[in-house]
Amino acid sequence: MCKSEHCEIRHCKPQCAIAAAVIIFVCAIVLKPTGVWRFVAFLTAYLISGGDILLKAVKHIFKGKIFDENFLMGIATIGAFAIGEYPEAVMVMILYQIGEAFQDKAVEKSKQSISDLMDIRPDYANVEIDGKLVKKNLNDVKIGDIIKVTAGEKIPLDGLVIDGCGAVDTSALTGESVPRCVKKGDKAVSGCINTNGLLTIKVEKKFGESTVSKILELVEYASSKKAKAENFITKFARYYTPAVVIGAVFLALIPPLFIKGAVSSVWFERALTFLVISCPCALVISVPLGFFAGIGGASKDGILIKGACNIESLAKPYAVVFDKTGTLTKGTFKVTALNPANGTDKDDLLKMAAYAENYSTHPIALSIKDAYKDKIDTSKIKNVEEIAGHGVKALLENDEILAGNIKLMRKFNIADVAEANSCGTTVYIAINGKFAGYVTISDEIKQDSKDAIKELNTLGAKTVMLTGDAQAPAKYTADVLGIKDVYSELLPNQKVEQLEKLINEHKGSVIFTGDGINDAPVLTRADVGIAMGALGSDAAIEAADVVIMDDKPSKVAQAVKISKRTMLTVKENVVFALGIKALFLLLGAIGLMTMWGAVFADVGVTLIAVLNSMRMLVCKETSKA
Image (cartoon, rainbow, N blue to C red; front, side):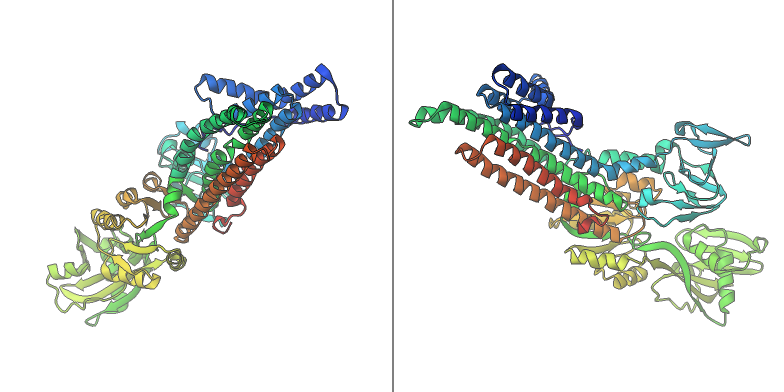
């Protein structure tokens, strides 16, 4: 939470102290003691309820922070005592403390959804040493160590599952309640809970570099970046508070000098009332609280926003730019078509492609090998040659196999190549210098990508695709999703250039959404960089302003809606607080508002503004709050 220099959020005064002050105050009202006992009774209740406020006011004066709400409450109530209005002075402090208690509860509620993330930090790791398990501090575990995670335990460090399988609860990171199955060969991400089975994990990252550590850093950082609205309120309060103090002094001194029949004590009391009404807490508390509630509400859905300034930018999107692979699509390729030529059989075409690509770890090669169900006899493969930017050349027994793009076919002068016009990636195959056909591999579009684009267009944002993929699959994906502006075959620096053009149009914020690994330069340059599918991605957490901890493009639209709702709430608080303050200050100045009314006005305005901010945390679907 961003602290204002004028109004601090502090720990609530003990309820027993408030209760004691109320009891003494009620007894003094009912028993009606006289003389010095009346003074002692009300002074006791006053010191119990407001002693900490007076002490804080004195401390702040010595620190140079004179004009804060503690000073206003102190000078107003001491003045009330000076003119014999003991009950009013005590009631001011009691109501103020009750208001602060409610306010503190509201702040704790808003912080809870974010502080819950702190529970993802494991306390230790069970490291296997010579066949025995030893509990170790996370900072003492090294890369390459073997750790065991039993059912119910949190995965302490990022690593590779080398034995066992289990259902992993990722809800603390992604907001998703459905467990994710992990098995041998899968990545294990710290902060998740192993719900069943025993996992043996080889550590790949130290704790300081792990997902859970970086998420905790992100959460702590989220509250440190102020939005323009917060900075405005801080500056406003800096000038507002001394202005109303000077106004109260003028109100107490000038009318008795220039208005015939004016009574000094009456105008002095009005000045005290004016001071109580002027307390700026409703503004300096509810505005940062509104942003904090928005960040907290978003975190419930696995959307981590690094600071209030990003909420402001998200709330006014001009263009939302998407990467394609891994962002709008799953990034998992599969063979969707086999197109043999010149008498080649489909099965033979797939076999030749699988054998040629056997030693490649490229996702396209892996998809071809997955489609080929039979076991590959590596003893038949010889003289494998990777041709950069073209493909692979290999010898399968006595047959020379070429597998790659159209440039590979042209490089080796393969005749009669039927150039594909498919929506996926094409791998051309030639056998002994003769064209044998091509294999089409497609990247699946994510289930909610279309809804995400539709929702963003409804919100008035222009949607754009920037991708390094070929023109045909990029255009196909864009057409399916309803994206009109698509730029394909781009290198990372070309993506930045296209983004710059959008930013220079100065029509609002430009948001870039990518996988956070190869798109780090664009994520950094955008007004708001959103990392998609960032579970376990260091680059995403480092470069992005917003991290979506699952793989759903729809969360981009949800982040925009949450930000719009947050900004509306903040503006409502500012207008409401300033409007009510202005009205009540005027009523107090002309004598139509008592000090009792002034306290109710100040505490009431603060509570209403705080409750309005808390609507952001009422339900999980924050955007609908």
